[in-house]
Image 1 (cartoon, one colour):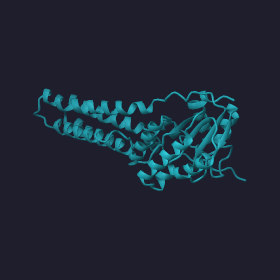
Image 2 (cartoon, one colour):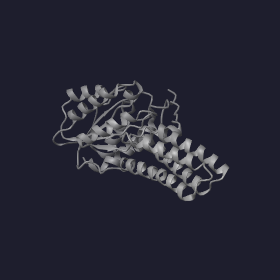
Image 3 (cartoon, rainbow, N blue to C red):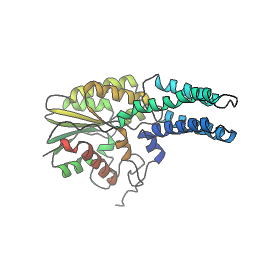
Image 4 (spheres, rainbow, N blue to C red):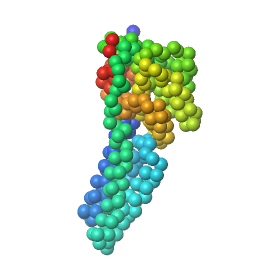
Length: 297
């Protein structure tokens, strides 16, 4: 049987999905505003206009769930600043009055988002059992040329891994699985939500089902960790729901840069989405890196 051909994911999608696109967009805008203030010649201003547009586009496409008022304020302040900096007769003091708030808004927005990209401490353990709830990223589609990541984690750590993932599953499917599964002591790891994004599940239903899933898997003797989703553009509300519900239940939310990094490289997937054998190895390495200290046979 021929070995399946591995395919990579567009690096731009990985950059945006990991959340790095938000920070690079903010950085580009801040740099453009600074240059427009310091070097107000015609060619520099034209280049800064283009840079601001590119930076704003990166921020918009990154699906970053900032508080609702932050991005509108940032957009207006930045737009006013770049327009004001085009007026040649404006004094340096007046220019600084417009450029300063624009730069500050970039810094403030980045500072608000930054804590969500810092890896939290793993759940207190040790646990000798790992329950995995997931979709086809975990369950596979039968074309991966090697073992799937739950099997690799079990082999590497020596703990018992209970693989409950189902190809094509959405959050409501995992909620039903959790309802009919008797969970004992252990660490619960959740990788779910991608199919809700692709199939355009209503955000209200997504939040309700995710809340119910976390309610069912939490309990005495168990800790829960969940992968934050690398989202397609303009899905910030799903990210906001995931952060809100995970905070409500006090679970570990693994920053989305980890999940996004699994897809990097030409050999990561078999079809541009589902993991190849090499992709499953990368996923196992990430799981062991972020929650490995919680697992002990």
